[in-house]
Image 1: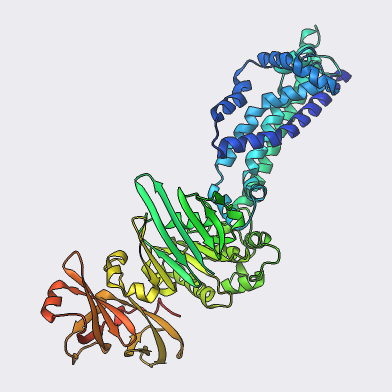
Image 2: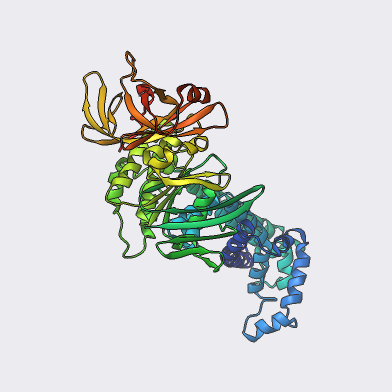
Length: 229
Length: 362
């Protein structure tokens, strides 16, 4: 069985989109997780709800809302268009969709990790003269690393598998916006396309399983270092 | 170095309202659990913002709620040692020590890492992870870490409270070295253990129900009969200084105090050293005549300075012995029978076994 060039294209695009989405989402997810874990402010419940919304909304609805906001004729879309950034029907839109869909999973894992860090350790660091940013980088971050890794893998896997919001927002243009799940779906629409679909299903399964295994290994190594064994 | 602080803070059903000063040496804050001691430490260190208050150190205002001044903890340069050590679990002992040194202000003076390692006996622990250390070892590392941040004052919040007897003994000499050594670092020391305070403090502040009940030089406050209920009747007692004269072959050491000589077992200091003796009030017996044929040889002529009746059947008697002051706790009935009044002379019998020089040294 030979695998079509289109399938390899879809794989490449999916990896590209997932990597961008994960990298861009990490700092933002960390910040939101920290806000939710350590700060009290007006509208905290609202922020929490907004973060979790993509988890409960049908993905196609999220995709439609993105189209409403960032489409060619939407105000936001027009503004971005003016600076040469087109999101709708473009792979960068797939990145945005992947970020939004994976965000609640990333924030959740990171928030739990931050809440598990004893804030008294951070107090102690402050009394030693460490400014707040240094406390975060040198004390909090190393201690939450397993949670950050877990959240990152979840976000990456979600980005690789995202389908509904992506196909609604950026369509399914082979070579341009056709991600692996979209390509699998497309292959299944064509009589005799099952062979290609199976090949791509294998690709996504291998990537998903490797990501989980890798995160497990990394998290175990970090936890071991923290426990000082 | 002078720290002056006033603060008032309200918790659920508890109000703290006090003012105190801490100079050079070790200033101990004593009070029962829940007296508000840790709140004071946290307010000084900047980890707690009180409702109202002002903290000034050597003329520099660190906090003033009226003036809207609040210097954040990392700019206060007050090294803090907490009861629970709070070592960073992901760093080795050496890295924990370096964390303190990293943020010491440029150009600040203070001990070097190798001096601290030697002072606290950390040589063999440097590569270890905090999780593998005993409680006493953790506290030594926490102390070293705080010292290396070159603080202008050390805040210690019950640093020995979670340690058992032998572990305590492991730390106390280091604290004494810190007090008497060339660092001369002022320390604000919170504790609810009278033995630690008797051994370490230069100045004592007694706190009860969120208020300062007494403050002054340790020797004065410990021998103040009014302090007996604050310290607890079993714990109250004067602290006096003594010079070690000689050690006998039978394990008995002769010491000189201003009112005479004492013979005590279990004194470990070298001849010529000056030690602190803690004489519990309940272990000082009074006699109108010089007693003969007693098993205790530690009898001192004393003058009654004050008679302080307690709430119960007991009374605290302030005594002067030479230049020192002692405290005796007797029953109110004994006060009446002996006719104890200020100015009269009598004899104090110190039960040798209960004077505790082993845990007190200087």
